[in-house]
Image (cartoon, rainbow over all chains, first blue to last red):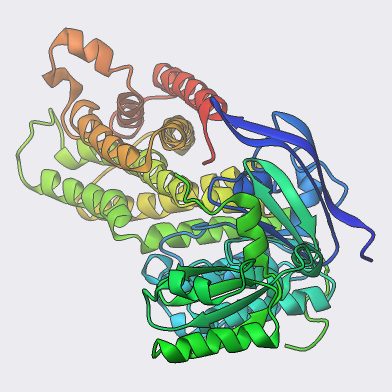
Length: 307
Length: 255
């Protein structure tokens, strides 16, 4: 089942006026969960919306479940489920009312009550969409994407801004979809989300796919390991570097979160902890890890902030 | 949920069921919206009662209610097919409702059909309400129901085209402002409660070509004066309907 592509994008180009949003993008997604990662403005949403039939490619071809999303939209639409990044619901509609409505547009929908229960939307009661919390609005949009029992679901940043419980519930649902043979294309900013859920990850930057593979494959790069620890912010990293072997690098990634990259062996671990002891630092979380997807992502797309 | 719950079983519901569900939801949204009810129910009712019972505007010979009721029926059609539909659709476009529905199994023409059904259902409710109040105020209508029906249908088509054109091209806020402004201007200058012959002759010629004037004048010819088919007014409405719907079809943007 992994061999049948659910999505084939070839040399896709999409421009908005003078700006090229997608610049010759190639992407093949097979059954399972595919995560599309990329910085803001990389072309993720444009790519996904072209696959959903919202945008006509300027050039290149897109096939979703073997169909052209624009010309064969009528055939394709019942087979896909779409979760937009935001909106999509009448501002005066109640959550269960809207979900029931979308269910009525399909021939064999899921049981709406069970879905409402499962995503914790029952508590929305008679509240209309405009007064729901951001998290409730997200979960409703997710429910609307799956209620028609599609073969392929597109989720555009499904957990952006969700609290940890809601995020967990969304992940569980995606896992169940996968287990039941539904394919999922999801865009996300969260590396852990991609690592947790995806069979396959495509990293997009400046309108192109710059890396694709399973999370393991992508992380296997670099032989060096990483040691991370947290302590109080603003430690003297220069002094730590002096204590370490010459080929190591150390940095404070975010305030209070430190990373040492190099050949991490027991000796090096002891060096770091004794340095901490000398400086009166309790490293309250210390871990030795292989490359994470985040490291790979930042390496590939650059660390500087973008406009 | 147990394993297999989500096992794909895609399929569109039968078209009539999709359109009926969509029309029911649209109507429910409209009836739940306070501002919409103000436009479609409260203002026409209030104007009818107020101007029939208090002698503010000189409505010419005969009972005021016989002059006013056709105008208020025209106003009801405009409030639902034009103002209400433009504002609702403008905000649906803004909030991605049209976009989300565009990827559902419901085809676009099905969505438009459902909107039309919802407008017609609302108009039936309005006509019943206005008619009951008018009879209570002593209204005595004449003329052929067929001519009235034809005027109402063509008027609805003309106003729908213009409303959708506005909703599909302007920003939601601009649509809200413009639709209300047009409502107010046409209420005053379209022969709804103020007879057109109160205006200077040159203005009358222009105002008479507006869809609201054609509709209120046509309804008045039939219902107040017992005229036959008001062909001139029907022709004006038909031109507006064709032009408005064609322009809406050409320029409407879904997001």
